[in-house]
View 1 (cartoon, rainbow, N blue to C red):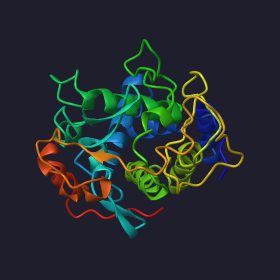
View 2: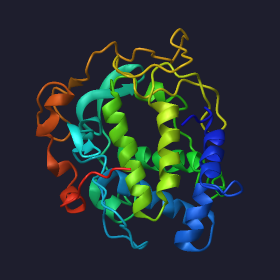
View 3: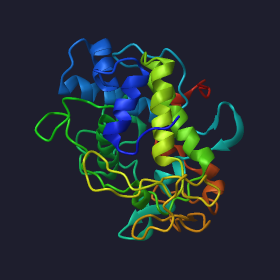
Length: 306
């Protein structure tokens, strides 16, 4: 399924597939879940969907789940088969995989309370709004709000515009993510959406948009939320499929070959207080105490297949 490169066009394509050409997915499902479509309720819906995508099902006021969600921060498989995917080391500081001023650094993005505040429908604990966790997760709310066409999202509303970095290739430069890892991330976003009543058709369209915009190397530059065009490829491992047509020759922040097949190095001292094996494949020793109550949200869950 082909989608246009810009986020505005992608949201329109999603709405068209859903048979709701005059209504964006964000507006449609905010009304369905919370009756009144305003900025506060749109932010609530994005909070529920993003938090569930990250940690799996947890008790919430919307009455989900309609299906099980494993969660991006939990190990799982794509469609329940193939290699086990473990994305947690990219979040908890186990790996030197974060682009900090052009250098690969270890950053703990779970320093705002881990899973516990997410289960309370927050990005981080209320007294930790300066944490890396708060910054990352609020950016995810805003980012997906743009993608899903939240009509009340703006700089003066309770649901702010996306103000993160405009190049996803730049953000993910040192992660060396492969297609399986990307597919797992997209799968969990779709599973979270359907757990709140999003139709399979709409969730498939959303997943298709994420796949076409981020899951190939050398994608043509595109704009996030009206910002300048920039490289958006997140799948940067040499094994990732190459976009057709491709823009591998572009300069600047394209990172057409990511880190040229080099896996992220382990942090010499994990920010979680526990060491780990070398590389992302050895990170199964990641420490659960970073997430605190993460296991509560993941107990008994299985991967979702769309």
